[in-house]
Image (cartoon, rainbow, N blue to C red):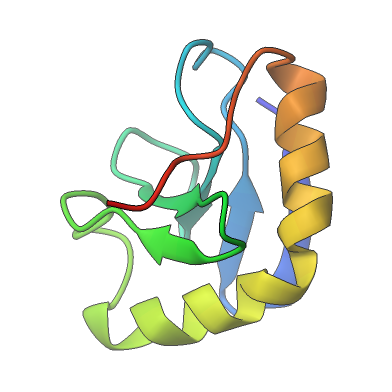
Length: 96
């Protein structure tokens, strides 16, 4: 599971699981060792990034979610490209 960015979010790490073929483009955020409890952030076709509310409640402070979304936005193109490198057939999630 490749780590794509480190330390852009202070105590949090950004990574992509290599075993998630078939899912829309997203990244995982954790403040600990990568695990199934990581927070998932979807990349949307309109250029936004949003937290999946049911993920990461054990590893991410809920007060940090909006700050993480904002910090990831400048890296949208990079994150999208890295996900596509790992999962060539993945598509961006659609709003709505």
